[in-house]
Image (cartoon, rainbow, N blue to C red):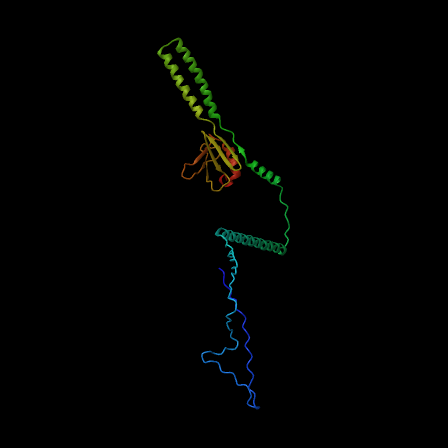
Length: 282
């Protein structure tokens, strides 16, 4: 909006005061001027007096200065930026703490090495020599027992005889089909089948000792006993070579496993057992 600026005329100077009346001399002096009428008040000194002939007040339009744009208030950080900054500060603090702890541990190790007395360094034994020594020790106690195949050999010979007899009886029955020849051929055939089944089911027991472990393979089963462990209870019944010699391996909640003369040579097994459990063969 435009504001008017008033223009006023400059104040007019006051007329000089009248000279004082003369004293003395004839009465020919001039009389004082008459006082102003009562309805006209004297002009105050210094007050402006409106001049009817003065120019009228002229107002000019002054342009209003343009309004200043509002100052931009910087926006604060978002919650994501605050969390990212906190995470960064926490990570820097964690890294600094880790470096400080590592430096302390390294300083402690250096101080310990400086204060610890020097110890003589022992040269380790060559691994090849140690392995060779262990192999020699184990090899001295390893053993493979000879299987007892005498009974199986006898059954094999009997089976051959029965096969030959059965073949002869069958040939005779084919030439002379009588009740006697047919019954004899059938009987020999049945005996042959029984002996063959006995031989097939009587596979020899194979036994061996490897690193103190006794392994027994019999009838499709595998049994392992630790001869070195004192927790393996062993009982020896009779003397090697006697009729009732046998070795019992006691098992928890199971029947003892029996090793007898039909499985291994008594003298050979006793010698191997004495190497691992001398107290049981004394």
